[in-house]
Length: 377
Ligand SMILES: [Zn+2]
Image (cartoon, rainbow, N blue to C red):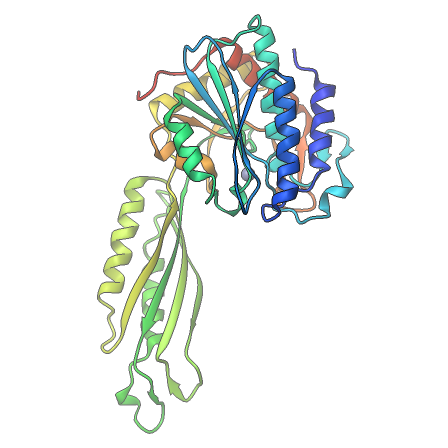
């Protein structure tokens, strides 16, 4: 059984502590609080020391070793220093607080679920558990990615405690995200005296923008956004330089490769004589695609949800998480195991309290039963 009051008390405590990604001392303090709670629950603590960001934490609980389960969550938030002073405010069914949804609520319910599962299983879980907590997810997980990939490779299943999707639903797919820059070079000239000697980088960039926008595939779920287009100097100068920035989201590796090839072709042959273009950037978050193994793992959570009166659907998210990189490394991954709520990254960020308690109970039930799929299915 979950002690819901103790869970909520712990959520209150860590939400009342600031942990903006850019502050190492503040993130370290929250990491210490999480680690202390994990140790109180009988877990072994390791850490991955960092210079610029908070130390990443690795909490382990040896089970019977049937399989190896990796829980993943981040304790940095997007909220600036000072926001946490207002702490948690409860209004009816909702608990408001900076970072409570994304994702201190998920970290807390993960720890309490491990403890409840261990007790329900008679002191020892069927599976070995590792809980990886990183401090730089909001900024792209640059310093934690090597650790995440190393731990993922040593586990059979990854469970990511990011917020659940509306529905309520688990996240079984996430789009890959690519940011690209296209720099266009033309030839400057006097716009009135000898325009024929110029080649407009702006016109070339505009054509590239239109062609890039045509790469969308709404049916598949691939989006291409030309977010910025800058160039030129003065109205009376044929523009010598221009630049576009694109955000591309893809549902699958096949779509990622189609976009990569198409963008390379686009810049290799600009249609305007005298201009040239170069492409930089990449997909920094590969798509997380559902597999037979990840769907089998998700089904165990759905069964537990049905049994506990909190049915869960399955959904695909346009946003990225560490689940993208873990799934792309070939580890079956279920995401969205945290609480449900809304308005993450805003002053109105909140969780639905019933979902905090229900998702904790569901995770505890699955961990106690040891329902994880075989690897590489
Ligand atoms: Zn998050």
